[in-house]
Structures are given as C-alpha cells and as structure tokens.
Length: 274
Image (cartoon, rainbow, N blue to C red):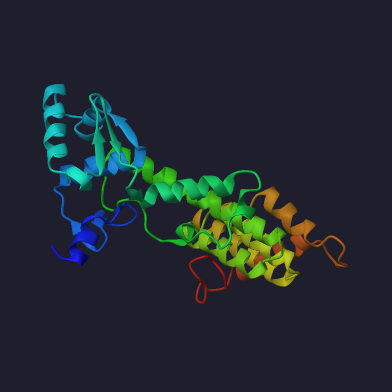
C-alpha cells in the first residue's frame, strides 16, 4: 500500500444522506447492499439506536427473530476495524464519532440558527442551508418520510430566521437571497414570502415589496383559492409607516391584484413573480 492509499484508508468517513446515499473514506466510495445502507442511514440520523428499535423499524413486517437475524446480517456487511462506521454494544448500535453525517450537520446548523439570536452567530453564511438535496430521494420507508419532513421544516425555518436576521442587520442582498432560497424550496409557504418582503422593505423598496405581495396573492389564489393572511397585510402596511400615501398600501395592493388577476400567467416565475 503506497502513501496515498494509506492516507485514504485512514481518512475520516463521510456519510451522505442528502441526495443519493454514499459512504466515502476520502475519495474512496464504499459500496453497500441495500439493507446495510438502510441500517447505516437510520443510525446516522439518530446517532444511537437500540437493536430492538433498529430491527423493528427496518423490518417491520418480519417476526422478531427474523428481524434480529436480518439486523445481524446487515451489521456484518459494514466495514470493520479502523474503518467501522458504527459501534456495536450489547443493546445499541451507534454511529462512530469520526463519521460526518451531512443530514446531522444540516439539522444542527438549522437548530443553531433558529435559537434566539442564533442567526447572528453564522458568518459566513452556513452553506448547508442553501443545498438542494432532499433526504434519501426515492426511499419510501415510513421512518425516512418522517425524517425527510423534519429536515425540510428545520431548513425552511432556519432560512426564514436567517433572512429576517440579515435584514435587521442591513445585509439586504444576503437577506433577499436567503429568503428567495426558501421560496424556491416551497413556493406556497407564506413565511418565506414574508421574509422576502421584510428584506425589500428594510432597504426601502416599497414598490418591489408590493409587487411581490401581489404576485404571492395571485399564486395563492390560483393554487388554493385563498388570500394572504392578515399578518402579511399588516407587515406590508407597517412598511409604509412614515410615508405619505394617497391610499393604504394594502388597498393599493388589492387593486393591483384585481388587475393582474386577468392577465395571462406568461412571464411568471415558479415563485409567482412577474
């Protein structure tokens, strides 16, 4: 084994769960059978899991004895020795400290952002929040669906909180980019659009704020047949405080909505922006 091979063999393992499953030691990718992948993914997400829970979660339709046998078989197919990604005890299986799990990095980062004053603690911006990969696409196990939604919600809340924090600090371009990332992820999520409007109002772009509000109103009307919440309307109106206006901003926005309602959808983006 040459020096490069030795370095790769001792590289810290990285478990990718956002996107297609991959276990890698440096540049070396380890191929695992489906059962071993599912086992490692579940342990990687939850850090430490009892053998009983693992067997019951991964093989819910099997007898207890068969599920435990399948668990032992899957564990035997994971790398061993210095490269072992899990630590097996009598009653539990844990991910080893050396393994970096991207989904856990995302969750920990998002939780840090949504803490009080947490959005101020990240400089530069946490790149993991701006990724597109969802958790294990194509996997339809019940536990995957639950974890996928948990991570999606955490990421969206973190993006919203980060956008508002950046807007308050006067970093308007970054606030807008962050808020629009949230909108792109979930175009019908009102809190994401409120973050966009907050960034626009913070830099004094009332016209763009009204335009975005009207565009979102149109999108909601077309998709769900509802209007934005009163909270969103109050946010927009409060942005006009101190300005001289002939009519309330929300009233003007309602008039614009009625005008654009009859226009063709051509020229609209996926976020509903004209």
